[in-house]
Length: 497
Image (tube, rainbow, N blue to C red; front, side):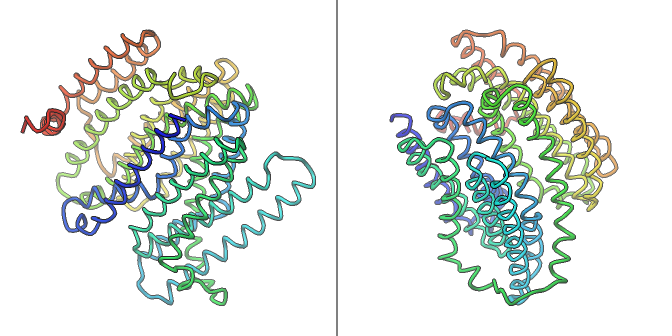
């Protein structure tokens, strides 16, 4: 119960802090703090569910058997890839078209068209599920389908809020969803011991209650949705914009998520449960990289035509490499020290996969930096070959390496596919901007590799803690002077300028 109480306090403080930030958004818009405001909106609104998923991992590991959790993780993977098909990625398309108009009649056409397409697709999914359930038995099939449909409407709804300019409520929807997910997880998984059924229901209730709360305030559906409004031209334009994004999303799924099915098929659900738990921790680094990417994206677009573009982009890139390198090392050693206290003993052997998965996340993060070349130049179609190539490498790597190295083969395949993506994009985007990699960045990158060896050779918690102190000291020593002074002034209570 102490674990539950600790989570409740932590998440309570988390929600209070972000709600206070929401209250000062208008002030941030008028200052240079707009960049921070963008990070807040994207971080809370888009990534809030991922953050709470990470926070709930230790909780689930104490109350859900390994094989059950492995099955749930596979179901979640299927749901996420099916989500792009059900929505046809029209959540992104709707946002893009709503941003360009203030005409309420056009807004009604866009929103009505999107919702009706998702309704039709949801009806098809329910029909398929009914037929499948009559032919074969699938555990939790109706919970899976319900969660898929609810998530589809949730994604459409929050993208609509964002497109209409309700960024505060876009962020608030993520906070409410995360808070409700946490509460129902405690109620259904911990107290009623419902296992993965409790996890499914918690996710469903979280999104339904979140959208219901926002709709009571904004009444977007009441104002902009009508069954009688049909605009084939608007629907066609949105689909032309959205379908390439759907293909792009499916390719990312192949690269990032298909490995779970290889583990389940070749090794088993229990091993997939182990992998799923450690992957949730490694995903924290990807979440951080996505927050950076979305916040930096607007600045990159604004600075693309500046005369010192290459110098500016190189500066950001080198600092990013340094920050990610330091983050990987510190994150992995801190988590290794704490792993035995935050994860149930049945899952603790999964820590062996932590460092290479974190390294894989770092390579992924760096590859996304070069994706901005396609966006700045408005040639996003050119990014497709690199994604497809990385997808092929990922599948072939999984097939070949899992036979020899088991789960480590899957991790190695992930690193290989992201590396191919990084190299391809680094070369291909040189026509848009040229990055000069500093010696400091190369050294930082190589130290990540060296620390990977130490991660497996230092077993004593005391030695790990001592080494971690040394790493943090080195990071502070070589970071930019201004940033170091700010951090030290915070730690020392303002004694330094």
